[in-house]
Length: 508
Ligand SMILES: Cc1cc2nc3c(=O)[nH]c(=O)nc-3n(C[C@H](O)[C@H](O)[C@H](O)COP(=O)(O)OP(=O)(O)OC[C@H]3O[C@@H](n4cnc5c(N)ncnc54)[C@H](O)[C@@H]3O)c2cc1C
Image 1: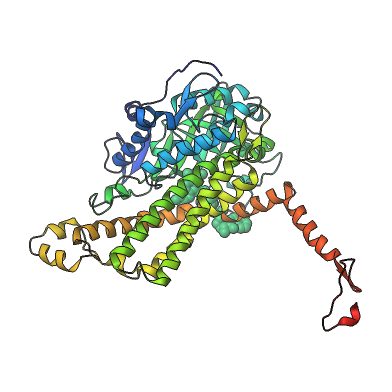
Image 2: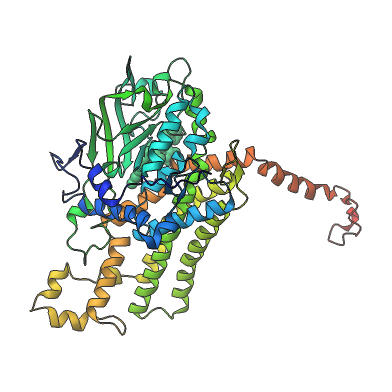
């Protein structure tokens, strides 16, 4: 490792400046002139800028950053890991950032670092664009650039061949000397509006036909302000928030999901990683190391969110006066079990990792696929528990903080909205937080998000099964059953050294 300590990481101010470009963001019928000041995005932008502060402030700099092999200081998960300890420290950095958003921003810049840290170590996967991979590694890692990603074709023509969907799905339209022109649409790009560039590829379930669908076998990185790239945002929970008291989460952690329309977008050769190469486009998922690494970020983020949810539920139970009931405690324990499971799984990702050719290490696929499965399950498992043990209490709240300040109502609210040994304002503050986390439109989007986070739900399971087949786990399970079946036969026990005295003892 070089002894230099070159620091080119963006500060929060650099990050804010980087967003003031000519990106084409559309919401509520208008093209947004500046997302850093627009009511639909500005608090989200500032929440992310706080992450950049954490890279530089003395309190957290050592937790968050280290120096990569080129001598550049960067976020610990943006650089490859070389040991268990590196992975554990990367996990701590991920957890630190996640706690700043209480686990409610899923696609913070460290998510895609799961991929970008592999660009240098696996650069040959991208031949003949090997140099592009290395250059993008440097660019992203040295600046701690915010990369979003978009993989999925829109929900239309799912039963058709992708070439039959050419008028909609993203493909190469034309090759020119300096690069390619692409056209089509991709969904859903979470956080794209806040990012510096977007990673574009096909998802892992794509079935291509050789010699027919090469135009779709692409993988590239595109600055988010590329001309003719249109970002169509869903409605903003931030701009519909009433106040921090009413919407303490959605007013600042809405990472917005958007549809990206590539309306004849120029992609220069230096941004291309895979071009018209079906074999490499498929291999990307198994060979890049992305599927091994990203669950360290996603699993840790979910674990932090579960810490928050356990604390929140427990506090509401205390406020409701139900915390000591046996049945209620049983249900709370079930959520703690999920919390413990996620922390344990993310710890397992750091131990006994797989070694790559260049000496770097990535979490083992077996654990990574398991995190991918459970990470997408937990929120759906938790929701019914809340419905069961909170009953109607989350909805017993006035419409907004203005009701609390209304002089005609104030005394009544103080009297009748109290909690168990708790003043009404404290109870309502808690209940509004609970509603924002688990009952609001923001919360419902979060539930769908977590479920679909790791791709098509069937693919998540199929990939795990395939991994068990490839790694010999299935064979090992088969041989255990076969060993058991060798213990006996139609004539009774085979050499177990004792006899059977059951009903059919003539089998002895
Ligand atoms: C809030 C949110 C944020 C997201 N953020 C991102 C993001 O940042 N980047 C990104 O790339 N994606 C993102 N996504 C998209 C997400 O990755 C996909 O929604 C997810 O992979 C599921 O894929 P799908 O929606 O295409 O569902 P499908 O794959 O269409 O699956 C839906 C159902 O249809 C069935 N089905 C579909 N096709 C077939 C077939 N050919 N044969 C048999 N059964 C079939 C499946 O079994 C499944 O049960 C986001 C999604 C949400 C909801």
